[in-house]
Length: 494
Image 1 (cartoon, rainbow, N blue to C red):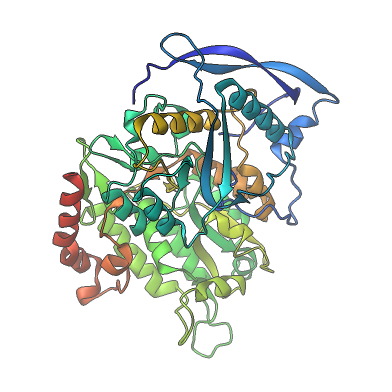
Image 2: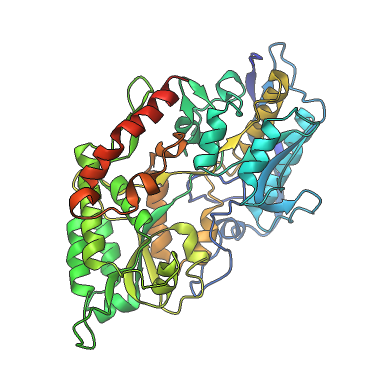
């Protein structure tokens, strides 16, 4: 819906501490469940917002510049007292009390949101309504029924359920709402790009980029193998953290320590699916891409993708701890915690969740880069946010406008990254954050296979990948070629 929105810069009075400097990247607007636990570790760190507050001894009323949105007649946008809920599966329940601010950034954000809600006459909260398990079905049921009086934005999770809902036309086309400008920096996580099909955009996220995958390493095991743990960071910083160097190190680690003829110190212990996907992205490759016309295309049989798949399968066969007989699918979690293997491909949230009680210290670097890549990369896959398609145009516009305001940078904290504080608390060394996670914020790509209805990387490709016969990447890619093309044809013709 078009409303000829205009902007002008106005002064916004906030009660904040005087800020000397800001050192991080982007603003964060929500407490994402993939953000690591804020439980402390042995690393002594101070949050950015608290560090900034130490530069002054008193609270000061300051006037910061912010954007005031007006309509075509010059009147401030009025949402008529609308109450809006951003639904997720981790926040305070709808009948609960929101947490009080605990640093200067959160205080400034609270002041800004109070001003925004009063100025534009609306209320907005992010609340936990669904569970992780029920979210897909809850959205499906709501969006396929007659709308009630509640005004929702749904935070969903990527996967086949979301792809099915997208295919069924249950998400509002955000490209029709002129209050959203996806060229702005706050949309840099690429969710809107990922979910743009045929010129129509169905999902968004105004949250800061989420640094996702990399490589954890056990410092004790590296030391026992004669490898200085800090050298892994040095390789990353020099640009020499490559597939070849990684395999060289794996050869040095793998050992039969008790001389019984069986390897018992493994170089790696992985969830194969994670390792294989990160290997593909690390070679500047992908499973599904977009051409210049915005059409989705199969990239499984490109040279760079097959090269990555072959390398990953070979590395897993040579150096990975095999799944013990009768073990659960997630045996690798306990195995890494117990020091069975030195390296594991994983995501940033695991530092504060899966590894939080690990006795050995661990580090974290980017996944080593392949020969087709010039730098390390981070595959963006943030939680998509949608407006149900059963809302009318005026209602959808107002909800989108409120979300746009809610995600705008906090005046005075435009370059502040709230998400990074949790990483300092959950990782064991500062290098993991300063050298690796900071890099992952800057280097990123978008993946498209998750939005193709019917496509499932596990059974279609990854499960059963091997080094010979029908299990090779080339053989499996050929076997699934026509099936994937049928999925893509259907998606491209929407």
